[in-house]
Image 1 (tube, helix red, strand yellow):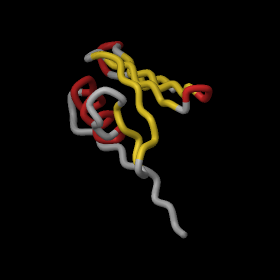
Image 2 (tube, helix red, strand yellow):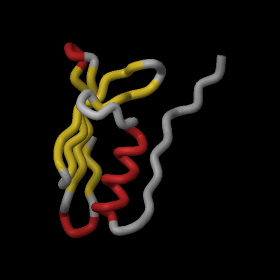
Image 3 (cartoon, one colour):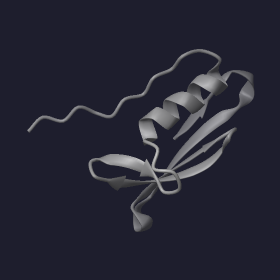
Image 4 (cartoon, helix red, strand yellow):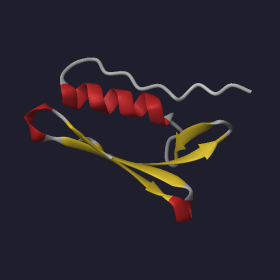
Length: 74
C-alpha cells in the first residue's frame, strides 16, 4: 500500500507473510512490526504500529492524521 503525501513523498506499507511482519517505510526511516500481545509492535523499540503510522503520516502530510486498529467483536 502506498500513501501519497503532499510534496510527492510517500509512505509504503508492505506485508511480509513468511516473516509474519508488516513493514513501514517513511521519510523518517523504515520499521518492522510483529503482532505481539494483541498489537503490532516495532521489532526494535516496541512502539505500536498505528501510533507510528499516525505520527509519520502527520509529519509528512503537514496535518494531523490518525489511524486506529480495526474494532473486533467477539
